[in-house]
Image 1 (cartoon, rainbow, N blue to C red):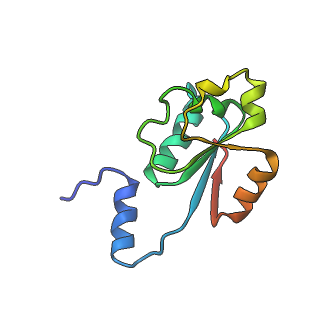
Image 2: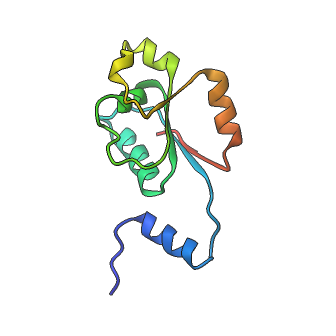
Length: 117
């Protein structure tokens, strides 16, 4: 019997066999890191090699090493960071900052958007 480690294993197999085409996916996370929904959203993005947008209390994922091992692009909404009193030096360097206009453009430009967790 074959054991699979994650949904990413299935995705990789189907891509390699030409059964599906690679699709860009964006996961929106608005819940804090200490919540089930927040953890579920980030896990989905990680497992599916998707990009993630962190909004509302989800911006706390951008602090420290909470996204360690995340291979997709991560975005954070500047206004939500500011409203929660998070300093610029607390945000991981590889996380991209967005304003509302950039957020709309990013969502509109994606093939698939999943959220909100």
